[in-house]
Image (cartoon, rainbow, N blue to C red):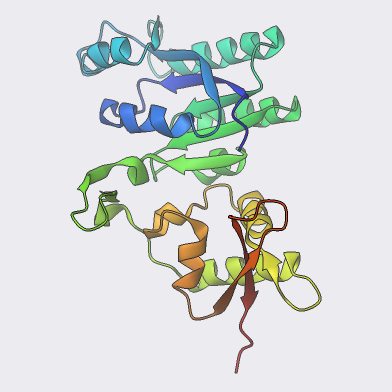
Length: 247
């Protein structure tokens, strides 16, 4: 995990519910330092009033954008123009585009072409073109936590937000293990996770109710897990996974 990566966080205020902001900003810090934080919208409109107090608490700069014409999203245009200005300023290593709007598909593609990492954050209604244009896409619903579990002490994701593990997901996992496996069929879990994300940027073990990838694999009878000693860092175990042969 790269801690020194500088991120520009650009939020589509017209498109994202304000209730997610605290968890969302905590999530973003896992991937880098948010050095630029801006949110776009017409702040004269009543539906954005819930954002105002939250912006101060999270040091997010509101950018006023009036809707000059009917049927055109001026907020999107302002966000895209700012993103290009930030790109050419070379002040950041990556972007976090927070929206469920497919209008940012071309922007995400352009930023990645320039060699920057792009994280997308949005609701599950986000169209596929925007999702696949990002290096990684995170659903806001999995950040919407309940109170801490009495037994584990960890916050629980709302059941309504958890997806079922379908045969399509199983195929994705099995194929990714095969693609990274050695001659004995064993694949390093870190390599498997990286490949899965390249194939499907919105893949996240939390979508299925698991905090990490390893517990997800352990829950499935199609795979076997092996822990190995790490020669360079003795107290940390290396996790390997292998497809069980179909009978």
